[in-house]
Length: 307
Image 1 (cartoon, rainbow, N blue to C red):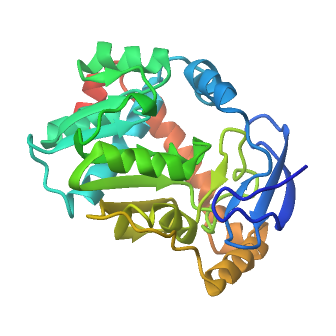
Image 2: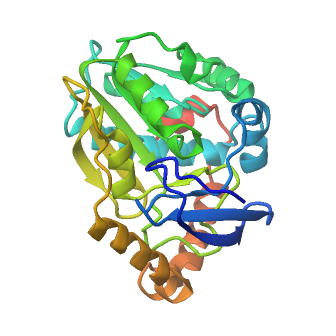
Image 3: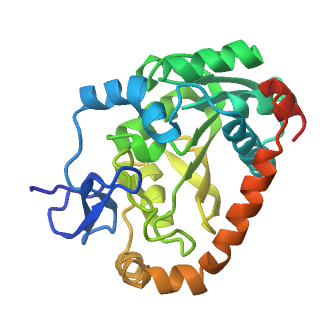
């Protein structure tokens, strides 16, 4: 299977034969030896991806075309944390236009509106976008990235979306055009270097790329400056639009690539259990199940308002 890195264009990589954590299908993953980007060796076509995310993704991964009560609660808790992260640098204000790309059930858009942002979202899945409009009366449109208007937002957010996009450089360029001068981009993605992810819960058919702090900053480098970055667990990055586009991409350095491969070798059950806290996961999972089983069967808006 021919490999070409979507970051540096290199063709020399370390191949990893693994399986999709959701359905156990065989996956071919490659870590580029030139820049350290971890990616699917061969990517689906753009048309296949569009059809998959419009119709099948939510059903495959959530087993539903609408979020369940437990998913609404989880999304609400995550949204509250993300709003706090964003608010350290961007003050909530109705004059601050916020666009959430891949808005899912709309929980973040709803809570960001309550926090003071002028919020809206786009979501390719028809079931989830309909649900969000029906339950929260918020502006969620069933559309893809290509339909966005230039300089139409002060803040753009992508939560567990960027790893699904087949053309990361193109996405950065489109988002930069969509943001107003001095605008912010807030991305959250799984972190391939984290130590608290189970070895059985890392690779997924729907995840085309597996980012580190180095590779995501590299993809953004022509259009954005890094303002704030957290990589304990998931990778959270707040970026600000450059006044002028940089001519060249700032690729990860040799030390950063070496560190990436060192971490990939270290990842495994021993690290996960004893360093990443996996030994306590069964207890945390039981507590979570008990808490979610006691969630009241009320309207989704009431679930979010109680968080």
